[in-house]
Length: 222
Ligand code: ADP
Ligand code: ADP
Image 1 (cartoon, rainbow, N blue to C red):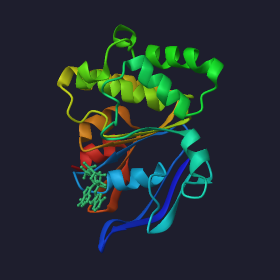
Image 2: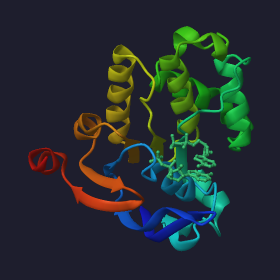
Image 3: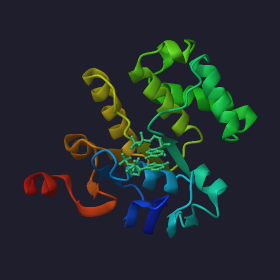
Image 4: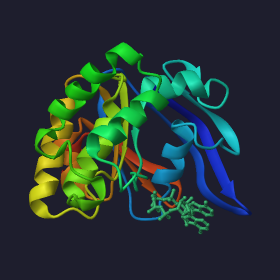
C-alpha cells in the first residue's frame, strides 16, 4: 500500500535521508521510530507529496507520490507534526473548510463532518474556537481532518508529541481503534508507544533504516 524505494533527500549538500526503502502492506499498522532529526518527517513529507525526493521513488496504492500527487492525497489522510489549524475558527467551521479543500461532495459534507466528530469524540467542543482548546483536543481536530473522506491510508507524524499523559493515552487508544480500518504509518520517538500500537516497527537513525522487526523482538533486543 505504501512503498519507499531508495529514497534519498538532500537539503543543500546535507543528506537528511539516504537510500530509505520499505513497504507497508494493506491493513498494517507500522511504526516509524527514531530520534529527533533522524529523517522521519522528511520521509513522511515525500510520501504525502509535500516535496519530491532527490532520488528514489515513493508510491501509495501503486501511484507515484510525485507524478500523481492529487490522486495520492485522496488516498492518504495526513496528520502533520505541527497541524496548521486555523486557531480563530470553530472546530466545525475548520472541518467544513477542510472538507471543501478535500472536495468532499457538498451534499455529503454535513454527514462526513458528523462522522469524524463522532470518531474523534469532538461533540462537546464542536462549536468552540480551536485556539481555545487544549493541545489534546487540537490534536484530535487534526486527526478528524485527516479522516475526512475516509482515506484507506493514514500517515501520522508524532501524534502525541507535547501532550500530557492523559491526552497521550486517549490519542493512542483512538489510533489503535483506527488501525482496524486503515493502513497506518505512525512516526514516534517513543518505543513503548509504537510497541503498544504497531504490528511492525522500522527504526530510522541518521537518515537510514537500521532495523525492521516486531515490537516484541525489538524490545527483547534492547
Ligand atoms: P525527524 O522528523 O526524524 O525529526 P527530519 O526529517 O525533520 O527528522 O530531519 C532530518 C534532518 O534533516 C535533520 O538534520 C534536519 O535538521 C534536516 N532538515 C529537515 N528539514 C530541513 C529543511 N527544510 N532544510 C534543511 N534541513 C532540514
Ligand atoms: P522535526 O521536529 O520533525 O525534526 P523540524 O522541527 O526539524 O521537524 O522542522 C520543522 C520545519 O523546519 C520543517 O518545515 C523543516 O523542513 C524545517 N527545517 C528543519 N530543519 C531545518 C534546517 N536545518 N534548515 C532549514 N529548515 C529546517
